[in-house]
Image (cartoon, rainbow, N blue to C red; front, top):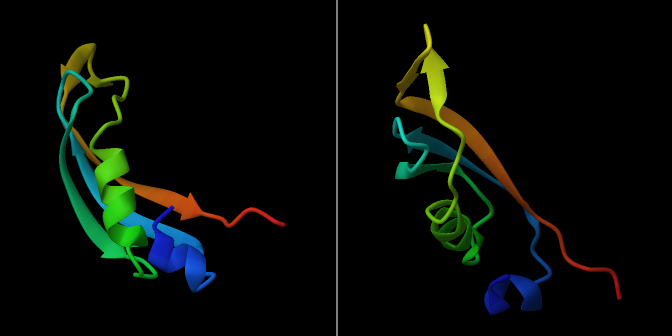
Length: 77
């Protein structure tokens, strides 16, 4: 959780378009919308580390583009 967002008490969803290759690796992450304060960049960097199960079409592994929402929520004190 970025310090600037934590200090400003900012939370919320970051929507991204994600391209996943036929092996399940993330190849591209594009920001669609988010609250800022470093949350957009943090979500994009986190998503680049994800590995997905490959998509299949007619039994063959194929690349795919999805919309992914990464939600930031502050812990209650």
